[in-house]
Image 1: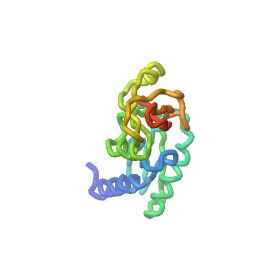
Image 2 (image 1 turned 90 degrees about the vertical axis):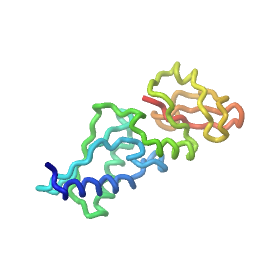
Image 3 (image 1 turned 180 degrees about the vertical axis):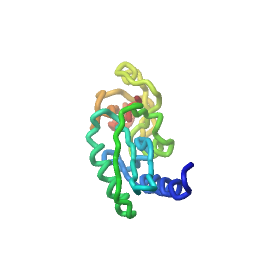
Image 4 (image 1 turned 45 degrees about the horizontal axis):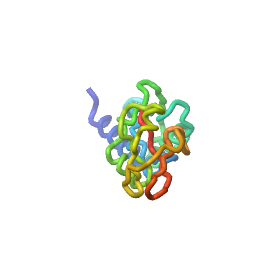
Length: 167
């Protein structure tokens, strides 16, 4: 049975991680994205282990996210930190928080709307424009500024916008 100290420490670590922003989409925290899979505090060694899963295999932001986690925990006096990256189970947009999806839309990125992802699905998708709300949109490119997003354009307001792809 875990001690109260361990439970309290792990909760405070989750609270700190709630302040760590994604370097590619700074309006989202790593908790909003759902990439933090576990937090463990070992009372005997005072070692904190944070397990994270990349949104895509080979995501270039993972090293920076690990550094940001270490820095945020160090500011709170937690210096013994191990970052563990795991690919299994694979990250899914289902792990994103609802508040994160709302933040994405407010930032101008359409949030994921379904679980399945393939190019044909994207080509048929009438994604709601986060700028004007129109569903009169078209896929411009399967990939956008990052591999986890596709580029759409609204045919009404003519603005381009990113769509956070489902997977």
